[in-house]
Image (tube, rainbow, N blue to C red; front, side, top):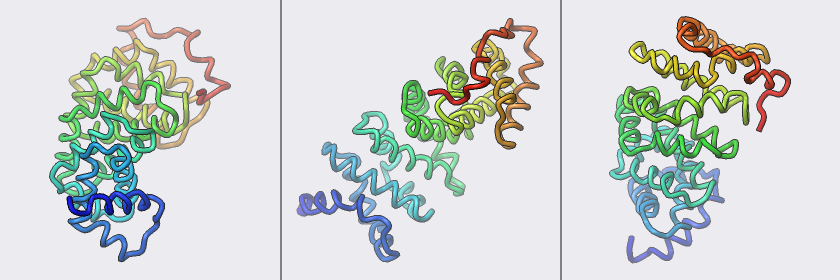
Length: 262
């Protein structure tokens, strides 16, 4: 590869614009040799090459589960994607990296829990929360989507519970930015609050206004899938309202006629 770096960089610079590709093209891009090249560029110092590599990777992984499985098995793949997220090159590169992570943690393979755990070990939960704080809509949606996926494993839930940003941030995002942001936020809160040994997280959610936000959401309307989670959460919260002075009629009802404010 070292003998052809310049040529490979030129090819890589145009690949993001060549999708969709033929079946033959997919086979070549998804070959072991090509994946090694992508990984090498992802780990390199050339910012343009790193961005182009992750943009191509995201498109490739979206085409076939086999590409996802093969990339996951590549040594250093998980670390390389976390590196792109930890040291942002551009919003486009970060979104592509997050989407690639989502493909990997959503894999139906038996190793999916191990994959999630590895991302958690590398500090991805805290990185996601930092992104979510002030990210624009699409980036916020993808970061929350990945966080929801990581909360499917015990390590992911534990790390989310440890971070003081988690619950205040998730509650704040409800009824803001977009419907998808609201759905992901509620899904994560639901997963965290259903841990039977964590009564403290229920009380924290009440303290930061989750009860009021969910009541408002029922009033403005939501899809059946998320409505079931909202109802479930309200039942859980109702068991603990006596422990927290959480009902303040002046809070959050400003959203009744103005849902999904930016």
